[in-house]
Image (cartoon, rainbow, N blue to C red; front, side, top):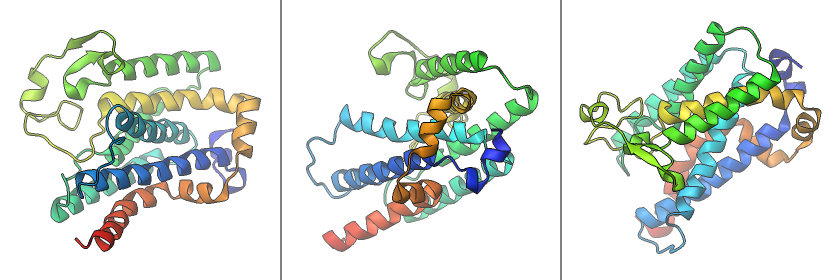
Length: 260
């Protein structure tokens, strides 16, 4: 089953839509809790680290990994990546003008766009399809590199987030702020959502490497093809639209409830 053929509607892999749909619903729940706590002062004692961090990661990491897998099915990753970047620019402008919370600079949609273009560039440079064994080896290597680079935006390299050893990054890449787009935020940089190529493109690329072994595994591909839940599939198919619209709708609902 090649990528172009499997991308046709009648051969759609429903399981990926279900996974994305579930993650979207989880994201809406997370942002609802975030707004209640940080914008309206509601006391949700359980909504704090480490549970808050684990919940956030379960959403964003799933989105990015699945997006990497789905990039191998896309007919035009260049157009797909550019569309993400345009949406990211619109989100930045809107959140800057509305200013309900910190504007979103280099958020997850920007990460999707940048990662998709990187993946497409790599595909053009390496057109030969890898074996399952090499794909799995690269998947493991990229996943390991992602975990090692996870805290680069916070100034460390290693396994600090997982309680392991780590090294302090040199301060030079962070000082000017010119590399905030890459994962080295400047001293005054702030964003309501921050997902940059370092480290998250590594997770996205890990997804592209995982795609072929998943397709070639009869059990896994059969399970994904038969995983059905029509409401979640609908949400998953329109994940970008739900991402763009959910926060204004959540804020509008909260304003109606709290009167401000």
